[in-house]
Image (tube, rainbow, N blue to C red; front, side):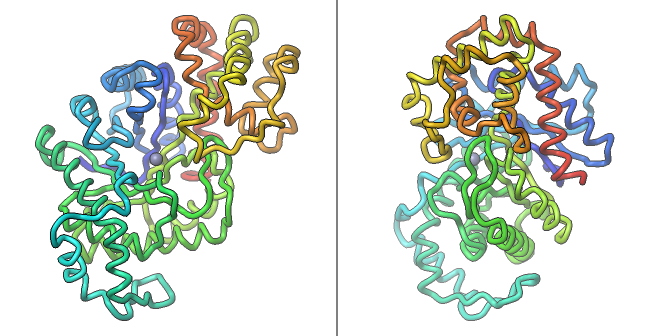
Length: 415
Ligand SMILES: [Zn+2]
């Protein structure tokens, strides 16, 4: 099973938007961009919402059937590890092995020494096509990288073999992710991480490093666009080199996590992909649920009431809701609208404050980030919320499709 050159990972927290999301992908195909849809949902999301992995597949299958989608599509067991992968095995065909928690742990026995020995040939000056300056690599550097990443990649090997033993070889796509760590990985680290992955015989098709800069949930990239672009470019050069050098799958590509809403780097990413004729997986941060809120609000009546209530409930529960996402959000409490202010808003005003349109004066990134992490409150509302999703279907679907197509797919894959 092979993932195509371009793919987009779309979270769908409440499993009501697969069809609206697939509409955006179909529109992309009509405009010449061949993109595979990947529906991702992590264990954390399932637990908070009270769903299970088969629910994701059921919803995706239904959308695929309704819209006569005949090309490949994937169900991503997102950010799994050896302790929680079992529940995903049956219903997923894409597995994101998250080993960030195992970074900087010491491997057992002589694994580290063996790794250093195996990579001896890279000591000295290494020239990689498309990277201008030769990379200077010494034994000490290889040891440091081994100390940092070898245990984590060996752990990925364990998870991979566990899944393979259940699903059979070549029946699923494997991604290795390290994005939820505190330090960005350099292109040189990437080279040796790929060497480790090959040593573990993981047929990795997508790899998600932590890139330089901040990838906060649901808002634009923060950091040096220039530095990011250079790093992204070198990562692609390293991948090309590593595929040949280590015999990794030739469709290996980068996966950009929390990749939705990073409007300021879409141009550079798109340009760099073209330069290398490379593919990419863009994993969005599950912001489809914010489009549900916008649609509910714009429908006025009960929909707007639900949207306002969720926000008002989020304020006294700020710490509880933000806690699990503390490292990937930056909310200035002073800039959050008060409950009284919200009471005076109509649906248009609510939608304008929430929708990620930086040219709109009413857009409020603090309001947006808080709501992004507040989906637990919608889950607690239960049927009232999901009934709202149905009764305001038209407004919601329009926002979901437009967000995915106009603000994400178009600048990255079409323009
Ligand atoms: Zn991630």
